[in-house]
Image 1: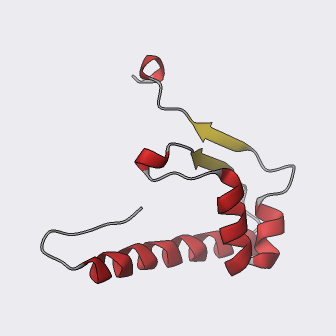
Image 2 (image 1 turned 180 degrees about the vertical axis):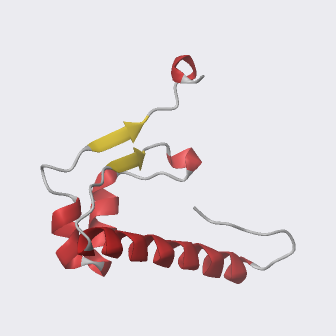
Length: 89
C-alpha cells in the first residue's frame, strides 16, 4: 500500500510505506522470537492494496528466508479477506 500525503513527492510516500513495512517485519520477528500464536489475513483484492499469495510468499522469503518457512507452513491458517457486501455489517 502506498501512502502519499498531500503535497509530498512520490519519494516521500515510498519512505512512509517502507517504514511501515519495516515495522511489520519487526512485529513478525518478535512474534517468532517469543513464540506467539499468529494467523495470516490475506487481502486478495488488488484494487485495495492486496496481491496474490504466491507473490507475498516470494517477497517475504527474499527478506526473511528463515521466518518465511515458519510463516507459510502448512499449519499456519491463512484467512482470505472477502469484500462481499452481504458479509459487511
